[in-house]
Amino acid sequence: MATIKPLPELLINQIAAGEVVERPASALKEIIENSIDADATRIAVQLLQGGIKQMRIADNGVGIAKDELMAALTRHSTSKISTLEDLQNITSLGFRGEALASISAISTLTLTSQKADQIHAWQVQVDGRSIKQPQPASLTKGTVVDACDLYSNIPARRKFLKTEATEYAHCEEVVKRMALVRPDIEFSLHHNGKLRYQFRVADILQRIESVLGDEFVQSVSSIDERAADIHIHGVVALPAYSRASRDKQYFFVNNRFVRDKLISHAIREAYRDVLHLDRYPSFVLFLEINPADVDVNVHPTKTEIRFRDPRALHQFIFHSINKSLSASSREVQAGLTD
Ligand code: ADP
Ligand code: MG
Image 1 (spheres, rainbow, N blue to C red):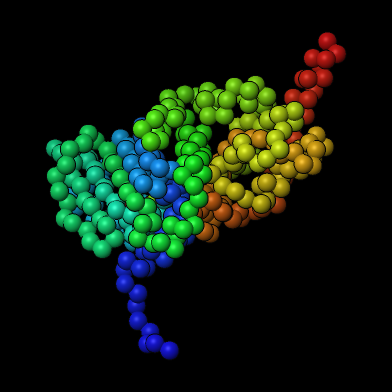
Image 2: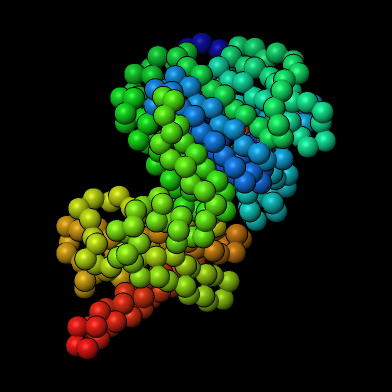
């Protein structure tokens, strides 16, 4: 056996990238989350060839100071947490400090940013092997992340990418999720030079309509339930709107899109008597819970989470949906007998 030695930094980042940025859409999710954490109110996404050739995300957030640009690209460097207590009370979307380092290890990345108090922007470029010192650049306040030729230096991963259309579809889904959870932010999405989506600032129902269509919003029942330290709101589709696949299932916990078995089970149970087994419910639900009662640090992509009291949460979700669905079906019945 060979001797034990530390891995080079680039290889460490490339290994981490396998988990954090498995495909273009995961890189896009991380970059948009950074814009949201930076209090952006406008986020513009431009993709070429499903995001594989290029993804360029421009925001009008707080920006990164010139002397912190290098740190932003360094693994395990973050402005979002600094102690274990912070980790137990996460209020930002990011906190692991590995996204930009990982993305820069699998692409050619240019980071340009301007803080409000700077007279011009600064730019750094990384191509895996080297980072150049920041250069002056021009931009209005905010940050632009430009990643080109994703995975071109990792042929093994590149081989696993699907067609351009499939990778684009995943990216589009990421933008829709972000748009649903933040109707107060304007989003635009271009693919290969064509504008695909533009979501202007709206209230939540309007935003749901622009993302999921008017047919969906006309077939929903709304939910707004509170218990101690917990709040669920949003809409669930009436059984008649059920789908043959799991599309249009959006559940957010503290503004984070999650896929969770316990939550899915609670929702499924609430629909049990009204939905055929081979049909799937649609919903857009937002759960607000004390950050200390969830652990989001379970998986690098943070779509899996753990709850401190899963049984109570299951009950709460089940009852909230059940109540909303029965109220709607009573209304429908009353309408029929009128
Ligand atoms: P994390 O989000 O977990 O902190 P990242 O690697 O995604 O780690 O980002 C590193 C740091 O770079 C962030 O903590 C933040 O300070 C800064 N940063 C990244 N993107 C932006 C952005 N769009 N606007 C302002 N700051 C940013
Ligand atoms: Mg981040």
